[in-house]
Structure formats: C-alpha cells, structure tokens
Image (cartoon, rainbow, N blue to C red; front, side, top):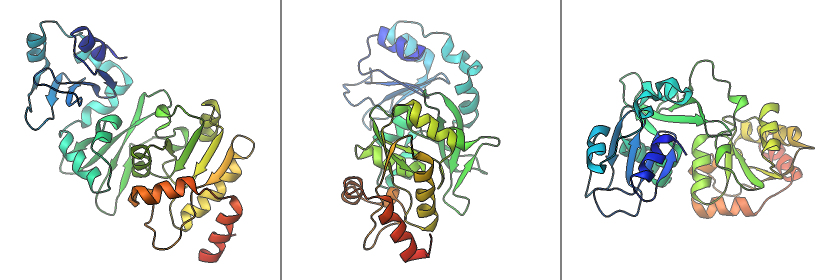
Length: 289
C-alpha cells in the first residue's frame, strides 16, 4: 500500500485502494459505497459521483479530514512512477470513460488501469500507464482515434513487459495482443495479459514462467498477423507452459477480442482448441503454414 492510501485509511476513509495514480476510496463528502473518490499523487482530489463532484487541492482535504497528508504526496516526483506519468496527467476520468465505453469496457476498468486523457493539441489521446509485473509504472502509451492508433514512449522495449501481469493471481492466463483486448477480458472475469503486439518474446515467456503460469490460452487477433503470432507464441511457450487457443473464429467475427461482446468472448475462452485447428484455419484463410 502506498503512503497516500495509508494516510486515507488512517483518516478512517472506507474502501481505500492504492492505485498507480494515488488512491481511491469511498467519498467522505457524501454517502458512498462505490469508491467514486480519487486522490492523486499530484496533490489533488475529486469525487466522480454525479451528485457530488467535490474536487480541489489536497490542503482542502487535509482540513476536512483534520489530519495532514504525508509530504510524499507532493514530493513523489522523485519516484520512477511519477517521473513517467506526471507530465501527461491533464484531463479527468470522464474522457477515458467515454473512450472505453465505445469498446464496451465498463467504466470501473478506468480507475483500475489508471487511464487518463492527454488533451494537449498534438496528443488528444487516451493515456495508458504501463506497469511491470510488480505493478510499477515503467512507461506510457497513447491510443489515438486516427491512423496512428498506438504510440509508445521513445526507448520503451515492449518485449520486456507483459501488460496486465501485475493483476494475475491464477495459474491460467489469456494472452492477447492489445490493451483493449486485455481490458475487455478482465471486465468479463478472465485474467489476461497483452504482449502489445502479435508476437511474444523470450523475456515475456520468462515472466509467465516466473509468475507460475501453468496454462496460456492464446487469443490473438482474427487476422493473418494474429494467426502467425499465435503459432509463434506456441513455439516460444513449449516446455514452459501448456498452450491452448481461444481462436476458433466462426461466422462474422470482429477483428479482435476487444471488439467482441461477452457471449462471444466467453465462448472463445471456453471452447479452446489445439495448434492443429489454428494451423488449418491459417492455411484455409491465408495460405499460412
């Protein structure tokens, strides 16, 4: 638990949960059981309940709670997390809510993943903190609504991180390509990690092994790159984990799991197939061996 969350607990707030951006809790300014209250490492707070909307600088919260916040709240710039995220935190949660709602991801996932909106003119994109297997923020990515789609910070090595691994507690994990696929599966109750592309690296395989993962269900995109990547993932994972595929696409399917509804995702997750089925499908549709 970070120092900000610990302070809120000492101040007798209920429902306190540490987050990459600081902490969330039940709002002290109204009757709340949904953790609509967020306090940020930047030294500000806000309630996102429609009937409350209380917001301000942390000194106001200190006065209301009658206890001083830890100095680390506004000295967190010295930590790796804050150095990466602080320059990009601009717009409040509702912008991120709207972006995810278009893909059928519930608003509760916004706070869980620490999503923000970078509203600078040259950005105007969803800001995605990227956490390592320990939950420490190591980079950020931007999701645009144009041809640029995703952009990462310069120098970030995607192959050294599995997005979402910090949340995994079970022995079975679903391996997907992108952030939105990962959010969608978690919102449906399936523990998932994203390789941030249609391939998995040796370093990512070692991360799964170190986490104690016994079964990896590959659920890459419904296109030629996704099927090529799935076959490569199976080759990389041999000897490290059991491999199955949630890629038995039939009928009119969207491009990726992130665009599918719950019924479709649950069916893919349950109707796992072997490598032979994936190879047959790859050959039938694209001539891929």
